[in-house]
Image 1 (tube, rainbow, N blue to C red):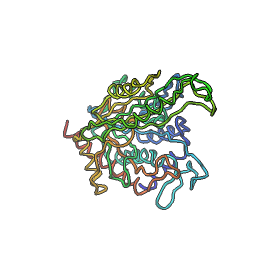
Image 2: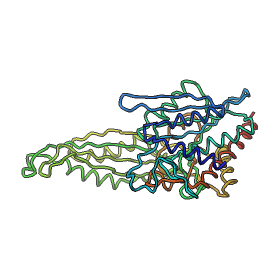
Image 3: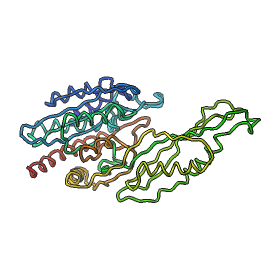
Image 4: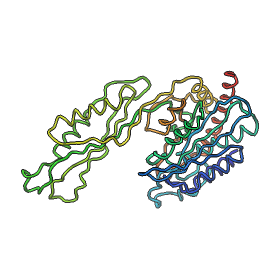
Length: 388
């Protein structure tokens, strides 16, 4: 079990699939899944403003009339490795030590994909399931996320494929396998506020209108903006300014304009319209020209801890002895798209080193993750039996 898991994880890490490049990662998955009896459908999506992305939908259909589908969602794309000289080992060789596998994607999330696929292999060798197993894999999660899971979901809807439940293999565990299951996420709203002034020479400020005067005041008010409304099962909302920029390289010129970039992570007591109203109110309190552009907007979501969630908790408890925290903390993930078609949870490797130099995963953690996935598939089968 361990050798297969290590080797398959390594084969995925070896592919330099820095978003949105695939580099053969999908091909590796297709070959493995085909050998297990999955039917693979490559989905190449493209758009005018973004690069084309290769995605994959695979399904292993059961032989009964029951059309229930349990899906695993993941991504083979990874963030850039950064300074290669700072890595202990080459980030794309999948270096195996006594305890760990090193490489970009080991934690986020090629290790989890490998654990799920190997879990499916072990189960399918021994048992005929009362439901179908599926995977949706994208190469556009770490990037702009326009030609990935978002469009896979649209394709699934058009094909009238009914997915009943989904597990996303994001690295949800803070320190140890079994620490945390994500059952929701806060919403995310990214904005750019452009303040328009009048350019001029710094020696003649009366002939210009410095946009940074208003920018500084607006930034101050934005930083002091409080989101007091609480929501059950969600952290408090927060606003963070991420950039203030004029594009001005001259120290003696008052710039024409300045831009404030910001992001709001908000709980279910807020919505996009309400947040925009608060931001506009601040901007309107100053006699300056401005415009607000929405860069991205995602609603909060929450998966009720029903039998699906409770069953997964039982599997985690059995394998790790831990009672996992059901959480909605952290950033966004592709679960924000999947929640539109079925209940979704997230559970994967330990995320301590994700996106970092020397990203790695403990081999024992991957083994535990595979065992959890296997145990859950069997428990899910029992759930389906009872519902028939």
